[in-house]
Length: 202
Ligand SMILES: [Zn+2]
Image (cartoon, rainbow, N blue to C red):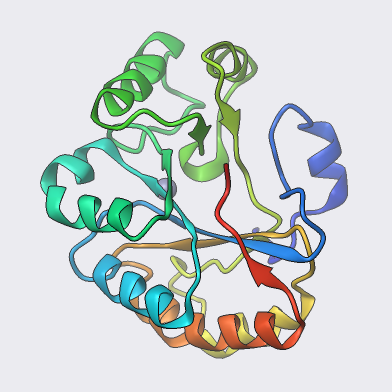
């Protein structure tokens, strides 16, 4: 079971992770799992048109597969975060292997932002990641665009619950393509109507 808004209790329980941005008048758009040839160029075009900077949590092997798209993300001035090399789930992966996957991705582009795939890491991994000087970035509002059972209308309906400091989670992947593309322009519109601005994470 996943919620649009992450319950406060979860945020308090896992308080070594970053759940929110710092600016009350801002929200933070994030896109996981790229670069992807079917969705990332589309997102970049939209963000350019809307004059928005966002944060892309990239998978190392996808950076290698789509170096040109990765350069386009950088060129447009967006933030980049590490999302492991092959999208390992922390829980169930040895810490040694997990950390090696993060380091391998850092070698392609070093970032102090890290987002665990599936939001899953164990306590030992968390300690190791923080020791590298990284922030573990979670989210407060999850579009759940990757779910088969999700529809764009439902994502848009839940945008009225977005507020300042929220970190919004979307995906750049085939799985999320339709939900993301059919909801993101509206979400941006709704956030702008709330007089909130968009900022990249740092
Ligand atoms: Zn992911």
